[in-house]
Image 1 (spheres, each protein chain N blue to C red):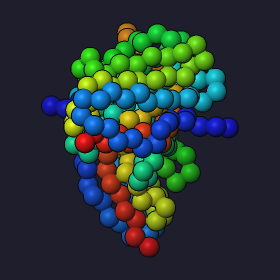
Image 2 (cartoon, rainbow over the protein chains, first blue to last red; image 1 turned 90 degrees about the vertical axis):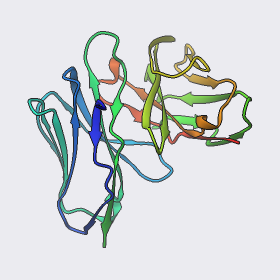
Image 3 (spheres, one colour; image 1 turned 180 degrees about the vertical axis):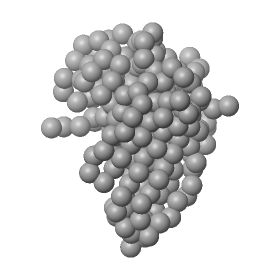
Length: 113
Length: 114
């Protein structure tokens, strides 16, 4: 079983729709959870960062972490064509010598005008 | 504010050659990490440096190596290139130790091995 699972999609939605992106993980040591957006031919761009469980909101984006279920989500409200990109979840453990992010494979999202 | 700068952007090499990729982190960032991105495997961790010390290394063969200089700039080297090394190599830097506030990525170096 991979440490982080993410549905690769592709996901196609009309402009204005609410988008839900999800990842599951198996490593209970993960404490830090991030969502990155990657446009074609660019590096990943940090969208949201959450520590432990709970919700975090930033504009049209909401990140949720449910550590009991080992499940994280990113919601995009009022989606725009400019949101079309690959969305990557990433996680990191705390303590010890762990200084790395473990990524999901990414979900390709297309928002149609 | 300048972002993470990676050079070169594109590179074509022949099997058996070696290559050196360069990364300049955001000013003040002392943690630098390298990742390999391929369509099949996604983003995979290569190594992480902090204050010139390699603190963690991913599951890659010894042909992959790196270093960090006193000004936090970093280089990675791949020797005896194989076709499977074709990938986007991404460098990321972080202000805080352990990247606890997230990492900022560069645009990457796209390496093609022929």
